[in-house]
Image (cartoon, rainbow, N blue to C red; front, top):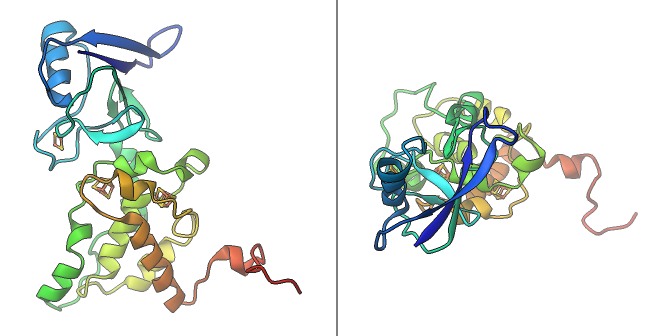
Length: 237
Ligand code: SF4
Ligand code: SF4
Ligand code: FES
């Protein structure tokens, strides 16, 4: 079995990226097992992320044949092509600078920072259970075409987290959080659904963004495309 890895090193000349093909004497390995074999038996300089080895920590996501996968959960196929996630700066080979995309969580205050004295009910806990399962693997971020044209776009997982916290009945600052996602946020999303397809946890960021649009309406916001007259709903005046 052969796999090709796009190796990256910013100091490599003349180009920082080079495709390297490896022959693996392994039977049905996961991608993480294959990467570990290459590192221990062929080339110790190969750099990749891993942690839990059981699809819960989110640190091993890469692209396989153009689609995001968790290395520890993906079974390698002959001729697979492996590369780092998109739209996040590559540190080396398959490791990206996740701090960059995680900044969106700070920008959107996607956490419980203004907690009331309320106790969360079981029903509310259940309601936001799916969004709480996010393992911050960055797969949705890498799959989102908006980031190709707008690097300031907050991205799917941060918006999903905002939805999780504005829906949390202990939260006291829903309006402030909704204010923070108007620019480079919910209205920039094209609702293409790529993030939903990419998510290994079965989270649906596209649906959460639609819910946030609806909640924004409650606070007086509307789609700027409508507000600016850029869309007339098919009517002529
Ligand atoms: S649905 Fe929106 S957030 Fe998700 S990938 Fe498409 S444009 Fe990006
Ligand atoms: S929403 Fe899904 S794909 Fe996106 S970071 Fe969380 S777990 Fe990963
Ligand atoms: S090593 Fe933790 S998700 Fe793959």
